[in-house]
Length: 328
View (cartoon, rainbow, N blue to C red):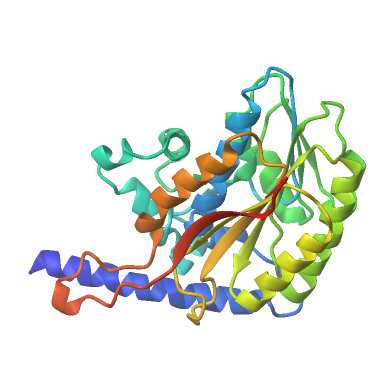
């Protein structure tokens, strides 16, 4: 009986999680509202983004020459999932929390990139507490070598102060600046190779997507051999299709799309899924990404397998896919 009560409580938390996810997405579209990633840290979108980030950097590490990592929206660099913002949204319950709860025998079957991701999360938690969760800059610096450098932007004053406190690495230059203005000033880097990670808050998506297309076209023109990775939310499929069409029309070659949807496209929960558009992906990254996404999907998709069959909600759809928007 006690076990059943625990299962039902987790079921209640799951439903509350997606209610809060919808509310947080709606509020982000209101004027004068500043996005705060602490509410969303460690959710399924973070898991996907950070695993793929590590895979890209692992491929860049395969060559001896140094590279530059540029993060346009660095955030705080580190988050505490035991604090009120993360606890209020509960989004991490359907992200990192699901993976760390897996049996070790299942984790050992995960692709190398996923295993690397989980080991880094565990390493932070051993030193900073079990609620700790890294941001993209922290993951990147852990994956980079001593010879590589990082340039990290964050424009919100209070978040930048947290970033400066959490990221203390001589390889990293931290800039309190709007990356939409600053990015073109730091590329191409002297290293001539590297990755630009673009992860804006999408507070006004109808403006953010067109602005991204313009930024990517200008950045690629300045640094045609650089790797660019753009994370984006999937809430409105029509908007994503327009974004893809505009990116196709830029004439930029080698555009790879990695996508995971934990809900079907027509589900009104707010954030149905997310994507990562990668320009100039490193050699064999597409295979790495596909392997990781196919492994992650059944663990992150919306399902209530723990409930008795009679009480289980219907398993929802969704998908994970890696495809070329534009080939060679």
